[in-house]
Length: 386
Ligand SMILES: Nc1ncnc2c1ncn2[C@@H]1O[C@H](COP(=O)(O)OP(=O)(O)O)[C@@H](O)[C@H]1O
Ligand SMILES: [Mg+2]
Image 1 (cartoon, helix red, strand yellow):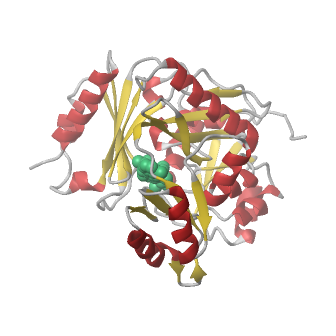
Image 2 (cartoon, helix red, strand yellow; image 1 turned 135 degrees about the vertical axis):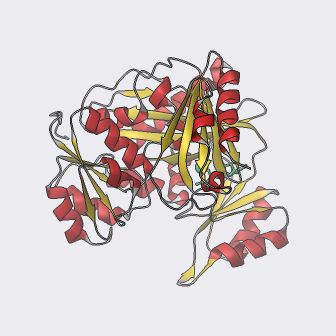
């Protein structure tokens, strides 16, 4: 049985990873009276700005991790590509929430898909492949178009290729399958002609209670999340199905904390799981302004063994990511963007605005979701100079 004693304000929360999710988590935790110690492999990271202390070292160095852990009362994550061995090294010293097994399952697409199918949770037809011939075979069974993804370390569409022919499959094997240290494991899945994509951020407390945020509708550009909006504008039955699947996933995985489930909604209104992130999510950023409790405060509550907060939507809202591309013509025109009614700005403190790099986001509230999307995309348009 896990220790059910709540970790109260004044205590220390450790967060593994130093990116913007860790930074927004630190802001929420610090406002609630916690001390936050971030653990990162780089010193100059977004979390460094808002945490009380930053431990810098190698995630594979278990002595470093154990040292950092001794300063903390509980440890959580802000990104999942941390060696599961690192998580396990920490559990000896301090409660780790969610537990490293959750990370182990969700950081590998093959294991994640196996988890989904073994629990009867719908996802795209797929095959796990470890050679050129297995990929050819998989494409014949699954059909075309298909998409092939590296099992490990993919994000923002990296490590993926769409296949329209068997020749594409050979090219994809050469670029994704042939690793320097031997063949990589790939997942080949059916291409889904979806009506839209949605995601559900949900939390599960130490007592097993679960609560989902309202599903958000997500539009991607170049495989990177572009705009999220809530309400998602889909039939109640579709939204309920997504929330029920997300809750089932958190419970089956034994998550204590926050996780996000991404879905495809097919033209027939079927809901298929795309992927699981065992942490807060970019599509949940709008909860900061739009919900009674933000996804970051919810993570604090869940990992500290406190009651989960209300996920009620206070207002229709939309979020637009600010990629490094917004800096192409120089420093963005912040004043013009902030002149748009209902708009809030979040910048992550990253110095180098590289194209495709998530530098910050805008959130807009409005009386309707259509107006929220109009406001947030207008604000993003006017901040680009030239
Ligand atoms: N099987 C698929 N069918 C159709 N579109 C897909 C499929 N898999 C991925 N995509 C598109 O690519 C995007 C990124 O893929 P995803 O698996 O979520 O990887 P990432 O880790 O990069 O977010 C998805 O949000 C979706 O737009
Ligand atoms: Mg994704």
